Length: 193
Image 1 (cartoon, helix red, strand yellow):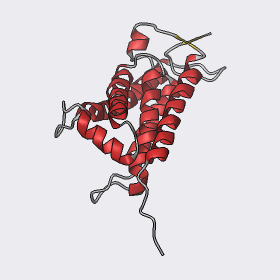
Image 2 (image 1 turned 30 degrees about the vertical axis):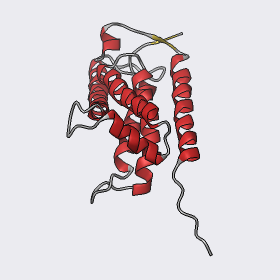
Image 3 (image 1 turned 180 degrees about the horizontal axis):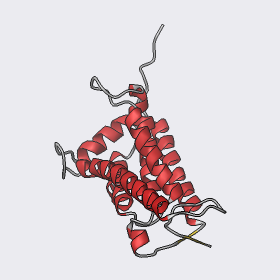
């Protein structure tokens, strides 16, 4: 079977015109908001927006967190955020962009945000922000991009196996990153008695 870009409607329910417009508008707002925020983070790593980051700087930070080799993971994160965010904004590729965003945010949340607690503020960036973005991206991966997307405009459909396969693939990537981080994460100094 083919997966259409339209949002799911339970069997036996008819969608009136205003319901379809509301769903498409809601998905557009969610896609653009989540996609732009995540894409901006990827562009920041390239030094193209904001105060100007750099791949070598991100690579050094990732290496210090145990994501080794740091350069590899910096490139992966930058591509995931910039590319996944762009696909999400455009509504192109079905679940591919949002699923990439979810995997990236799961890793960054566990590695960089969990140690800072739940709340953002006071110089800390807790889990509240990346968890919200990840939840929005996961919802988009499950529901679809809606009619007001490039998928909808181009009448692109995707096979039913794409969503579970792609989610499994990005989940494997996220687990791999976390396992590598666990193996190479800095250890607290041993107490001597």
